[in-house]
Image (cartoon, rainbow, N blue to C red; front, side):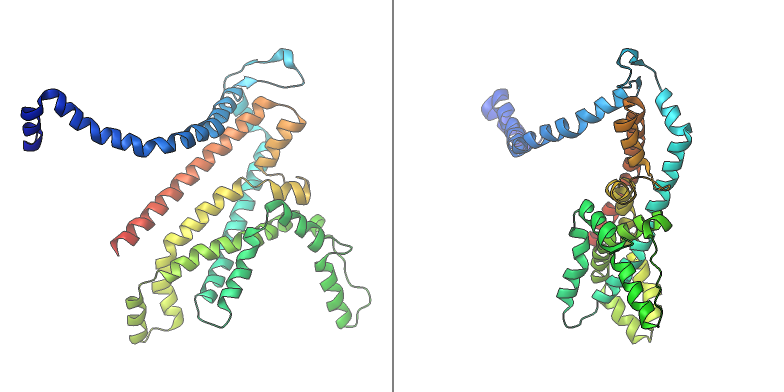
Length: 320
């Protein structure tokens, strides 16, 4: 007990000391009380449905056979991990996620390096490059499916027609882009939408480079490539990791593009779309819930790494 607490106890007695110690606790609860409704709302909206999903995942529950509902243990999880269609959807999910994240990171880095330079109209160019990320995902998928990919009136085939006629050909090819490259069509649409996100993260990293180190490299005669390789790229490592992790969290859960562009056909059914089919078409609530829990666990693992990267970035910024 400190000298102040001892003096308080002698003057006011134990009851007064207890009241004095309770004041900071009341002040702390007064600050936290306005957040309690939001916390309760968050728990009701997110955690209770997940608990219900977790319970259903351990049950044999098919809406077509309501009389056969019973507890089945981990059988649904065994089915999820051994079913060939579900394994194929997991592989498709990994392929889509890796391709979209890597291509978006590369293009985002190139655009960030461009926007890091000073030129006339940079603000306008930055706004235009950010615009794809602001489009609603379903609207973006519909735009690519009908305005770009359509073999009859799509922009891509229109450009092919113009180019081939410019070279004197009267019979230009009119490929069906979605049929010929189903996964590529989804990857291209997602890359268009997620490249601005990567660009913003990497641009923030470029603008946080220490000016002294860059000036010292210039004075020492380092060229642009050497500066990028030995200074810029190591500095951007954390930002690249952050972009990859956050992008993976969202792309793994992508449903809109697969549902809108291909409806899960031609080998493009990823895990979220397979869960949708299992739940709404096969009405197998237990197996769909188990697959959903697997997705949540995988997302939590990725999010944990993302939070560690964010924390390390904040620590590095605090040291400067």
